[in-house]
Amino acid sequence: MTEKIYYEDTYCREFDAAVVSCEKVRERYEIVLDRTAFYPEGGGQPGDRGIIENAEPGQDGPKKVRILDTHEKDGQIRHYADQPLKEGTKVHGRIDWQYRFDMMQNHSGEHIVSGLIHKKYGYENVGFHMGSDFITIDLSGELTMDQLREIEDEANQIIWNDCVTDIKVYDEEAVKSIEYRSKKELHGQVRIVTFPGADVCACCGTHVARTGEIGLIRIYSCVRFHSGVRVELLCGRRALEYDRILCEQNQKVSMDVSAKPFETAAGVEKVIETGKNAVFQYMELQRMIDRERAHNLTGVGNLAVFIEGKNMDAVGKSAAEIMENCGGICAVFSGTAKAGFCYAIGQKDGDCREFVKEMNQTLNGRGGGKPFFAQGKIQAEKREIKEFFRTHKGNWLIFEMPY
Image (cartoon, rainbow, N blue to C red; front, side):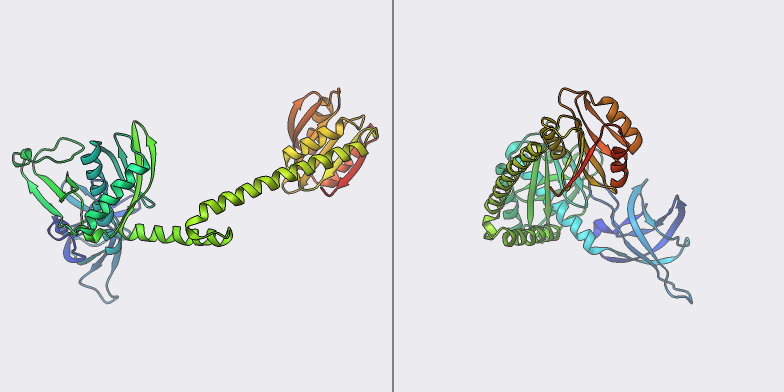
């Protein structure tokens, strides 16, 4: 059994120990020490990482190995390292304290939020994950963001009260007299973590000594998940850094839309509405141009038209206008050799299927549609497309237009 220093002293950052065993498992080395301050993954909290250093260095100086993750198996704490250490070696361990303290802040904050929700609404925490982006809590009932804002206010008041975190271990008989949260029935010794006024919960994780150390609790989102909701939150330093990024982004948006920081939403809505009006006016102008172009091409017969900067939808609309007047087959193209050319081909009351099939085969194209109208894309040089029409029967006229 490994001596678990992290339970004796949650704030222990460095320690001395001896290597009990070291074996290679796939691409990593599993190192077991006689004692450790590295917390193993459990209770939704990720395992610690850090450095283990040979305390008896040779001529080449101390040998350091990086601890990438930590797990517990059969009472032994297994440190997953990038290099091996010899059995019996005296070592000095240093945990990544910033990472650990982040976990302590966020795990403690999660307890407070889950406890307050359970206390107020009776919902159970049925899932908990400490991810690299957010902490997520899956709840057994539905909540709104307005309700969660109230919980957030209460949670931060618990922080400002700077209450002492109470952690005790009870035997199976003694714990029966305590009302506490737990996802499953527990037997043997039970470790109970209490945040006064907020939560009493069975937990094997590491926590702050006082709620004031959490610093800040922020709830960012709430979405329906199974029969309840999934809540995203951050606490402490991670919440501060995330809010700082949000503030910087909001300041940039504020400048871009010429709105005060608290009025950016209205400013963005105004820009979007202006953009929508501009797009509508542009589309109306394009329709007028298409109609004028179609009128000017009345009766010319078969023609291929290259127009710059149009997407598939715009190419189709241009072809539809021209085919009504030209008196033959109308083929409209837009694109580049690298990206490919969108096309639309049509003939009023005609059948273009054989022509489209031949063109696709010759110019590496794909597409289809109705007998009188087809759309698709070809991968070819513009000169190859023009050559296809120049040599094709039907006396094709070829035009290039800027828009």
